[in-house]
Image (cartoon, rainbow, N blue to C red; front, top):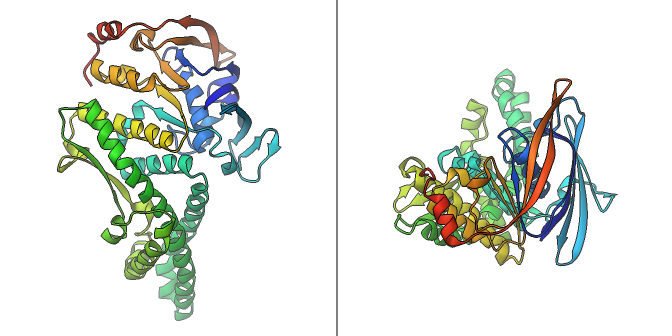
Length: 411
């Protein structure tokens, strides 16, 4: 799989750009803030309908514009599909496939599959549970695009139920009639939350089950002298859910557990005005030996764990007979020589490899392909990114990479 063309209109700092890409390494070089990361972000958004940098769509639209457009043509086993996404600063987004409008933007999921490595990946180890939930959901929808529907349904029900809980306590104190109405409405939302929550949780559990051995293998390869790595799912609903293998056959069992826990905590939820049970409160545990990576891993171990998670995603997609587009967003500058070499070795076999770097010398010499220079122009107070040149680069040798890595900072 590879992206043949990429076009942007009013996306971030790009007013307009059209790129022809090839199944080879392409390195975008430019100073920080010049817009090179925005190119990878647009493709990641096309693959997951999420940005890896922000939680809302508005920042993706160039200042002063009403919407941004991302156009891409993806080739997979000789078959081409063209996707156009219109991202609205306000309101609903739209999408077309081969110029035909689709009813829901999530219908484009699965056309492009990609794994993105970025400096933000360190938050997978050191950040809040929300970062790790996002990671699981992103790889889940690439493996099973239909899972995006369950997630959207769950988010909708969660918003409605949370809004009810915020007002439930006061309403119940006013009269028994209002109390009965609140309880009746909560029963309806509980049923839906348990169902959609079970679907989301079962999908995540299945992914964790398949990822765990791949993470352990990748981490051992990157950090052979460190402690063994392991990942586990932790559900707010309790260990009965954690023990499940996941997958469609586990949905009914998980639904029953979630429904029971919702009944148990209902009074607490009304008192606090919060939904206390569901996949929105779950976490992915990352362990090194007998200790959690968060709080106990060194900086190097944290980077190794983050890289292992991404490398495992590549292996998981390949096991699903998909060769993902691999994107490396300025990560070589963050790594020491050994991790640079390992990442370069692993990604060199990718059908398409897209890389950004502020300094071209950060890229291991073994990676041959094309280098595209990104610049920035200012006119009438507006800053716009632009392509300012390109050249072919020949790959070096392993000894060249080692020489480049001698001066690299330790991660």
